[in-house]
Image 1 (cartoon, each protein chain N blue to C red):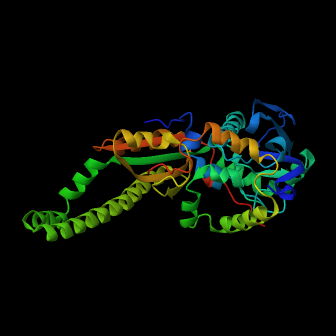
Image 2 (tube, rainbow over the protein chains, first blue to last red):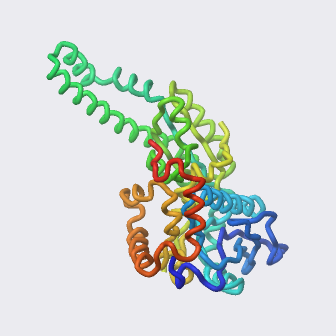
Image 3 (cartoon, rainbow over the protein chains, first blue to last red):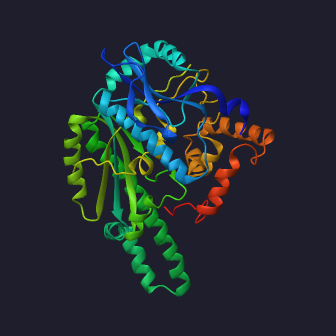
Length: 278
Length: 105
């Protein structure tokens, strides 16, 4: 690792920024340690609190267990801050401000005009994630039962010679694949339409989780038990009071045969956090 | 149904968000944007699907910077230097079941 860039004399790992009141003391320690068991504390300026710990290098490791622990620590620290102070503006993992607490205070002052309105806007709002999966067998059965082209191909395969049958079977699989894709797009659309009215913002995500820890079995176990495919994934920014309504909507979705819904949250609004450009 | 917060949910459900989303800051103030890989080079090895993200175009800009950086680093300092050894060694000993195996999704 290069010494000039990834290591530095003094830095502050930033977890999140939270709104604070006059009572909040600077340097207040949160009742937990953060990434790598570092003590986490609050730097306060202009009605804003930055949740930080002191560090002198980026956090980098190839061991998935270490990375997993760091990510959980990062998230748990932001959660704790959120419970204490209300919806936080969460930072990406490994966001480090080079400098000391004074530099953090300067930065809070510089950015107060941007940070404060975002915090106001996000107040009492959290990120919720919804993942809809369906039993593969039931899905295919459903698709086959409702498609004339597949029915026709099926009929022709039965009466065809071996060579022709093979060709037709390939066509059959292609058609089925096409239908699966269409269905996924439709599912995502339907889910977005159903949940959109109850959310401040909704982001459609790719049905596959794009990033996983290399040895992360937990993501595949449910699919191993029964063959299931994720049909849709969305991320919502919603007021905490609307979580029940969203849950009710999802009950209706999950009532369909073979459909399983995973509804998680409330999370800090990572997906809906702003980008601070130049 | 009620939303749940599974114990490892932060990693299972949010890993992409924690690494990719969240507040992104101005490059001159923050060390982890543009100038330096947002995600450490070794850490990247622990993640499956980073390349997939690039394919989706989500990461293009980030990745371009990242790759340049990786190249620089590779030229400047061989991976056996500094603190790399213990982690890698440990990994070889204890965490060897399926290195670089993508869960079959």
